[in-house]
Image (spheres, helix red, strand yellow):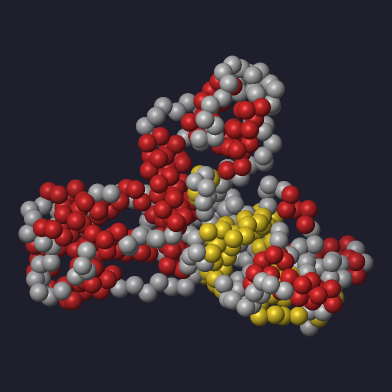
Length: 483
């Protein structure tokens, strides 16, 4: 189509239909031989658009119903087909929103994508349908989440009645309650048990099912149905469907920067995994930023392991936390092994140091890194959103061993730590580090997991998808980790 025909067809579009005119024009500048949507190509694209709901997307984003009503072969149909195809390319490879919609602070390598050029190439692929299928994220975690989305959509049509504990504050193993049958039915429907004994007794079998449910929702695994567990049990399927859809969008925005082998920190779950070719090789608990000092979304690469790191206290922590303590206690700095160096407070290396004995460096604009800690008891907590933004590791030596090449690296790490000198060791392999935020994810064993939106980023993303911008309560900027 010529630029003139593109403009004329765009002027006749039905009211309320908007297209990305510039991208469409760019496409026809590449494909200047006339109309490109043959009957086969058109049917292939319409079929694909009819199935985008399985990605948590509405077909209306791609003009599907309007396209079905337009006369095949008309300029208007041609134009709208091209816009729909360009939208599909962009949404599946880059998401509907920019990375800045995911969090207040984001550092992700930009995606360089020419949708018009990509579509022009795709239309000449040997198998256009296969080319379209390859556009969404290929990571197994994305596909597992897609299947979960389809399953939860079917649950939306079922009747949902909130569970009541019939006046009790909590339900403990061994209790009798008229709420037990409904609880049993809810646990079976949720997939946490195949069958449970009938009656009103809270049995050991039910306790096991509750513990399984609590574990995959990031709750304290105690077998007690208290306030937090009840709140999760009473989350309607529609909310779960929305939660999964939001995380599918996060995947599409970030997938270009998430290789199949990576260190992945999920701050919504406060956990770290080392994933190699899509399979988890190492997993551990982490302590991440508090609500007011949220850990940013970052994609970077591990550069070095530092044994016995000093802690250069950020100015914000010095001003807001340390100076008031120093003013009240003139022995504070000595007890904490701190001193003033060139106008800032530095804590010397050692067991007393807030960074522990190991630090794993990766570039970021926020001075955020991974490190050991001298407060290891905090890993026993279920609520681990406690830091100033950095990531404290439950198993820092295990991760450092992998980064330094394995084999005798663990012995070398121990030797360096025992010598109590600060030593920076470049990693053997600069593995990608992805600090992400998944509030819904499916484990490799097929277990559906949900997490509370501690940082309020689900709401931020929803607002961005509505075109209303982000949260009106920004988090405090992250400068570095603290005590």
